[in-house]
Image (tube, rainbow, N blue to C red; front, side, top):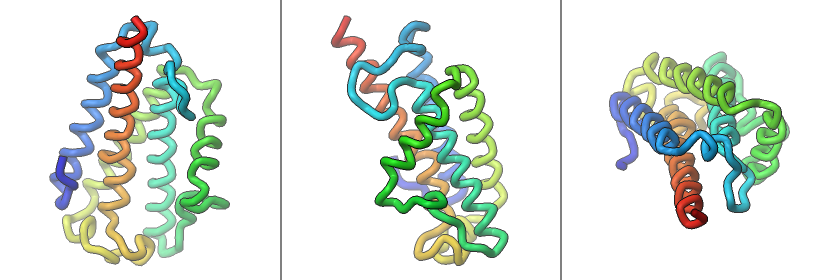
Length: 171
């Protein structure tokens, strides 16, 4: 899939990848949906994948609110640098271990809708002009949205496909 370069392409890519993720999961049986991945990974199950995506939506929303208010957001999160992403992602994982799959799915669907609304609120120029907003540094607002939606959904789809391949291999 080509990297989105317009608002329409970004909305379409986000929607398509989000729907693709859920179509991959729909093909799993009830036990597999609740089961743990049979491979070593930080994310041990579908719930963990959902929560990871949800929390990155939340962080994007925070960056957006802080940045649009004229302040400089802490990206990726206060106390973390991008070199510290494994620790940040582990913190996210730990924070949601008592969350069930249905709740995680609901959280993800709600935060996806919020991302969609934020994208819709902008023009192509606002989304894809580098440095249009000072807080995005050398990149564009659209790049942040791509990273937190369609590209991240692609990561999740690959993880679910790996899970499905492992289940098939083990059966």
